[in-house]
Length: 142
Image (cartoon, rainbow, N blue to C red; front, side, top):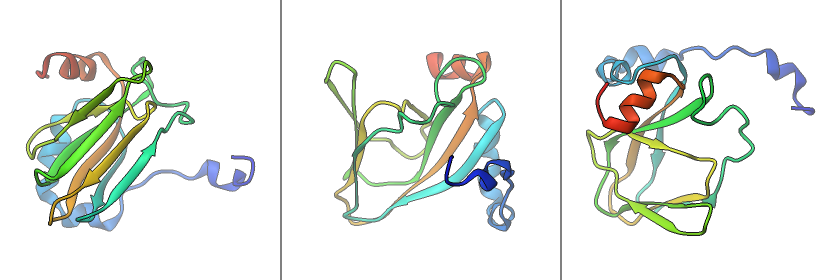
């Protein structure tokens, strides 16, 4: 932030691509709350996102007004594995399937490996935490 003070006043806006993908709007609308950023993230076949954490993101968390990261797999394969480490060092491995919605606490260490032959595409949304969003995460029902 010290090196990019002029960018702190930037406003997040939709790009023209959003209008080109109207099929995604029903997915976006299924997630309650104010969306901060919405993007499609690709991990190429054979790609790796090495273990890291987004712990420096002070706006992240589950408290009211904080940002939650939601993943919606659009295109994936059985060779894609997401691994997250708990604060006690324990691992959680998951395979996110198309049609599912996942909350990820990216403040904890995590990595993704795509051992498949096709790219992985996820709709990723940073959403302002709210009671209705937390209820969806806790129960799977909006």
